Image: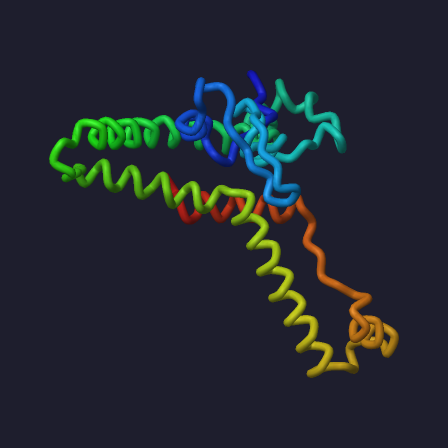
Length: 196
């Protein structure tokens, strides 16, 4: 079984449309205000974006033979395989759309209901599977949990020591969410909101 370590959150078939030679893509770094080119295999991706690099924690290779489904789940391969199926279907719809755009002489574009649904699914899935969506979830959860902590300290201060309340008031206590838990929640959300 081959393991995909570098997992894209923007499909490569989509990125290829923005390359000049189907290999390099232009990047603009908004922070340092510089542009450069990179191979699409290294863009909009992260190692184990949908999986957990448990090799750093346990010997996952021991699960490979006896528990192949668990091994695939741990390594994020199940999600990668599902996205691959969806991307294959969506690539066809986008290719059809581009052909129709190129061939449209009168400026009218007529798409079948199936094509419109396929393209809409692709757009929705792209919104859900990005790094930005995951980061927004993290900020949302931090705000909610901080608000709950703040309210419980005000409503039931007897449940907290004076030191804890003082430290929290000074901003010395903050809510943090473990990255692996956030990743698992993100993946769960994607497949709940996009069950196909």
